[in-house]
Image 1 (tube, helix red, strand yellow):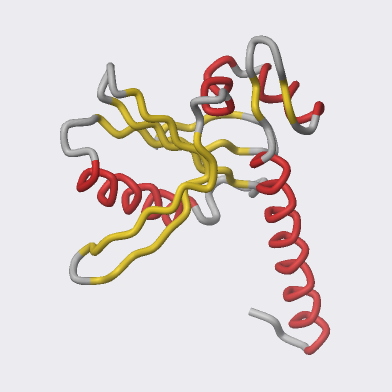
Image 2 (cartoon, rainbow, N blue to C red; image 1 turned 120 degrees about the vertical axis):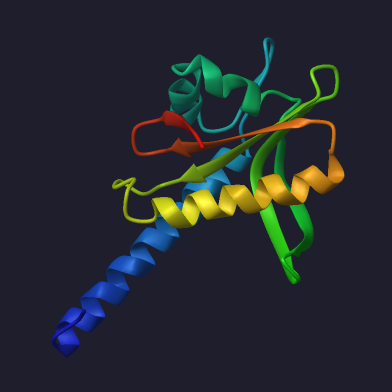
Length: 147
């Protein structure tokens, strides 16, 4: 809790910096497509994605970006955007990837897990016979965490 006006200002400035950095990273990731013949987007980010073979499919042409999803959970209307989503009708699987730019995974982990639970619940209504797999991409070290 801030103890002085300076602490309050610094905390707000730091929060704004983190929000801006996250927004910019999402925008850069949104523009990436990795295909066997063609790659689009920020080359440095593409290299980080290619280094983790489990990430590449999310950035393939089959991967959808900024997917809107909405519905009612426990009587409350929920409207969200999924960062990346893949639908595999043959395997009956929906895969969701959510980007997080935090450097400390534990600070908001509970909130992020709740967010991914909401995605799963909303998508179960749309894809009742599909498995739904959710994961977080931690962009500070390019690891994938299944949640």
